[in-house]
Length: 220
Image 1: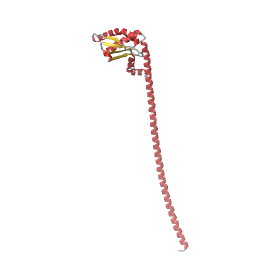
Image 2 (image 1 turned 180 degrees about the vertical axis):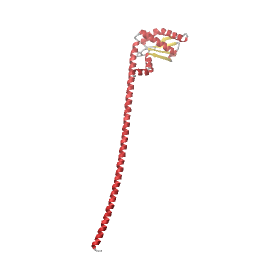
Image 3 (image 1 turned 90 degrees about the horizontal axis):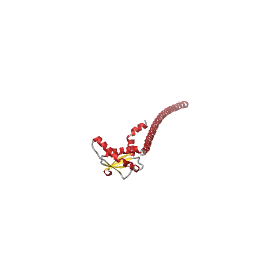
Image 4 (image 1 turned 90 degrees about the vertical axis):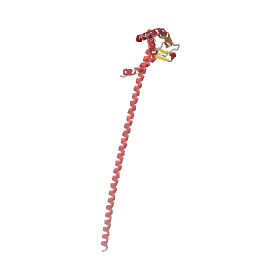
């Protein structure tokens, strides 16, 4: 083998080695590219899933926030509605109280109201001796109807039970506050038992007992 053949053979071996190296490098490059694309795909998919999850969480939180805001607004509106209705009923009560203040000025009408209130209270107490308390301004008027009230009580008992009953009524030395709308407070047994038949209490009872009917009438 001469030098030329040897050189050719060496060159052939070099080319073979280079080709093998290129092929191996290509395979390595392809594998690296494939691995890169796989990791890239995983990363992209992971980021997409994270974005979806974050978006779903944000959407859920926003929905909850809106629900809370809506519930708060509804509750505030409901409270304002209740407050407005209560104010309306209180205003009505105040207007009725103003009207009741005028009752005492109509003496004949007020006198009969006092008799009825005294008799009604005595029917609850069912005692032979009852003390009647009233406003200082009503003292003379009440004193003047005690006998009539006692007789009316006896007639009512006789009519309902056919029993003769006697009732002794006396005016209390103490008086009701001047701010009272009128009416009487009845007591017996040394003041241990009382019946409040003032117009103030009657108004309060009426407003409490008839509140459903009043609401239905005022807020249909």
